[in-house]
Image 1 (tube, rainbow, N blue to C red):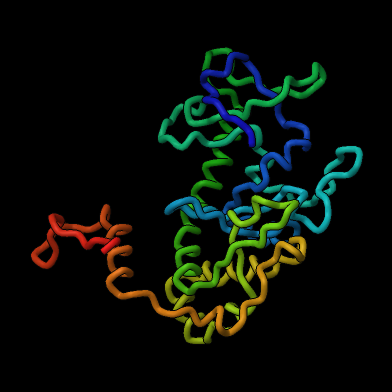
Image 2: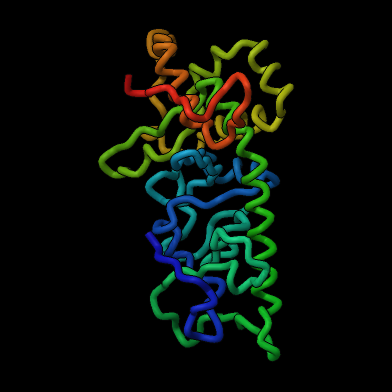
Length: 270
């Protein structure tokens, strides 16, 4: 796992870019923009990573997940399409709303670069973010905007109970943090359910399709185990417990009204 620090506090006036591809396995996965899904699915397994209430659509790039390597034995890049966020590494967005590109970016703490490694300047002669840094920032913002649009797509897949975790093995212990589509659940989706999903956003249907298509790049032992009918027909949860969970999750967005008082909340543990 790479450590990141604010670019503004970077002690040097330049940064290595692009970096050697030896960092692929330490990244594990890379964010995708919504305009990259179709092309990326031809080269990478497309998955969803769930972190609390945040969902991210990712491409897996760690060799432990892939059916074929992205790098040759000489370190040469063998992949074809390279996602924007990977092309922008070692930079990533810092998660703030700063308009200053030096404050809006973070840089990975990497091993010392070699004297002949290419570097880019952080600032121009007037102390403003360099042209290269501004280009990296703008590219990563487009990915972030695409991720925001895909949040609704993932919600639709979660509602339809189509997402299941990858299967962890001794050689891939991090696999179960990633989710994909299980083929049995997909095949049991009714036409009416798919039509309802498409009415809300066809992007959810597209995401489901590219995730299934891209599983050919995922090692077979990591793919979800085929569910039986008993696995799919999960017993309905207790209604009170289900409402309590929903209430607590939605509380930040609920408004007090004559029908609802914020002074009362169901007890999820009751």
